[in-house]
Length: 564
Ligand SMILES: Cc1cc2nc3c(=O)[nH]c(=O)nc-3n(C[C@H](O)[C@H](O)[C@H](O)COP(=O)(O)OP(=O)(O)OC[C@H]3O[C@@H](n4cnc5c(N)ncnc54)[C@H](O)[C@@H]3O)c2cc1C
Image (cartoon, rainbow, N blue to C red):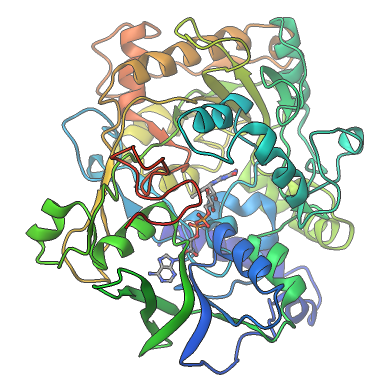
């Protein structure tokens, strides 16, 4: 694929400039890899993403418990460590490669087959192998609202100690903050390098009257440099953070290439008692003395529950899957949508252009590898802001839009990776962006924080290898579209500040095919642009909804145990 060519190009550029031997050190090694498989464990954990790795780490603290962590994907190589490669990795086999179903002309209209690609990580480390590494907690009120709904234990004051326990803040000015932890497994830092455009973004925010904030601290509304899950300016997947340091524990077995096909449930007691898994090509039935923990992500967790007989009765009946428990599994799917098409050209060579990176590789790679410095430490996203649109009905400090500020635009890599990852058609790309290919530019992706639309995950059939059907239902509630349109207009206003004008920022105005019937810049035009360049931030969640016993749509209780 064009993505793997791109990654290979990068790989080649890297390999060309370092001495032999270093690669071997960079390969991930786990003494845990080849442990024998037992017939029975105390706990079986399905999926080695942030959820699964964290639980594996904590449970294996008890030396007499035997833990098995099963992961469908593989171990990763050194490319994953290079922060700037995150977009490229989405196009690699580290992504399950799912897509939304085509839906009634509401969204994804400028994308191939009118389907939005919906990435989800696959490998030991899960989606933390390919994610953007932004370290962002929910707003305080989100947790308090969960608790008010009956989810005991989830109020902000109750979850904050766990955020702090997990975190090892490396940002000097936050070392003494009562909102941050210093001893946890997850390193949090700024990137070492930022383009001069970040200063323009922060200055622009102040010109517009916003404070600079620690958005994980006391207040969220304002502008900030992005905090990221980095250690020594390299990506730290959950496998590196939570499994690497404990890989000598002999009560923990981690198996990659291990695809769980079904959770075994006793139909009488309704207790999960094991899993059916294909491990390196061979089928195994493995039993769990205490619990099976499902942490396979927002698409595959509901899929596995449904394949195992837990899900909406009518849907399971249609597929001839015997129903063990009728629960609204797969429903309540939510996503943070944005629009990544805004392109502001600048008059200085300060953008993050892929060609420039490849050309500078002889300098950049050793700089990153030996000193943890330079452009390879960048995430793409340099700054964040939390702002309020006129539609925000929430009380103070619960902003409804997040600005994702990036020193790139869709055209910065000549359409090789970012637009491929988003699935933008050749027609749209060539009509709008090819004229500004590889030019210095920046963008703000205005992302809605509280969408009202809800989608669902269904099974296509009862075969474990068939990908799930994802009915996104984007913009089913058109108020979501209105909020993003306001966000776009606010981003354009920000581009007119002195700070952004000092680098010659101008909005690229080529109209999007399919939207040319609207006046460029009108609300109708921007609404159409959002429906065409529907941009997902890959925050899929909600498909095994937590709720108290009286919530008929809940799948798990506040202790995350499946009802029934
Ligand atoms: C492109 C992208 C960018 C993102 N950026 C950010 C960001 O900047 N900041 C942020 O906080 N979040 C970000 N996220 C979201 C974040 O990465 C996820 O919320 C998080 O990884 C979820 O963790 P998890 O453990 O629940 O699931 P996952 O990380 O998805 O892990 C689930 C694991 O289960 C495995 N699995 C699935 N099915 C099976 C099976 N049948 N058998 C065995 N194993 C199975 C999968 O292969 C995977 O490894 C991003 C996500 C994406 C896709």
